[in-house]
Amino acid sequence: MNVGYFLYDLLVHNEEFVGRSDISEFSAYEDVQNPPITLLTCADSRIQGQILGMDLINKVFTVRNAGNQVARNKGSLAYALTVLNTEIFLILGHTNCGAVNFAAGACLAKVRTLKETNKASVIEPALNEEKIPGGINLTFSKEKSMSIHRLQKVDFSVVGRDVQREMLPLTLPIEKVIARLPKIGNEKKELAYLSQANVDYQVEKALEYYGDRVKENKLVIVGGVYDFVGAYSSTRGRVVITNINGLNDKMKLQENVRTYCASDDTFDKSGELYKLCCKLIEEKVSRI
Ligand SMILES: [Zn+2]
Image (cartoon, rainbow, N blue to C red; front, side, top):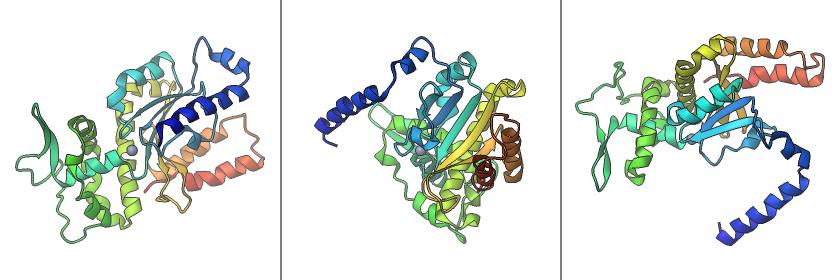
């Protein structure tokens, strides 16, 4: 993008936002923010707020990093969850996540450590590591999937050590599930499955830190995957709910979402939108 074009966009389009905003909107939150939702998502440019379909100002406290990792921004998340007391914590991964794919490539190459020198860094194979912890053998000689074939070509040298350091913790959730990929048998679904596994892991992490708030009914942790490739269904652009408070059984999850929706008295339960919501629970509360 031409810098002049960017600056033009910044000046002109922000002024359009100013023009259509009511001054009372700013006054409402000029002294304090009170968002009900904390969103942790990947820094990937393909994920933007409008996918949630709502006006996010003063509603969503957003924290982003590569691979939507809870441990990377503990301070910002603690502020949102324990000082601002947001009631909902949405951890949103996405299909075809570069950070997850990087970690999967590292698992396949059996590398999980970063050797650092003054001049450069090299990701090193773990010594004599035939099997990853947990005993899953990463040899796929017979049933190698397309995604594994692609992930084995990950070139670690193209990213610097700061990037590598940030991505390598993602090998922890990925190495637990990567051996299941050949059984899925569909490249889009296989990669989405890895993102889903990462979200499960991040929800687990969040429960470690904030489980007390969940038990006290002060917080609900929702895990989801933004599916822009059509891995969960043929409809692209859907946010799929894959985990609630660590619950990750599809049928139980759907029941859980139905219960939450049914207990909210603000909906007209006989209206068309509520019927649509019930239908969408079956399609968008899902798992691979
Ligand atoms: Zn990503």
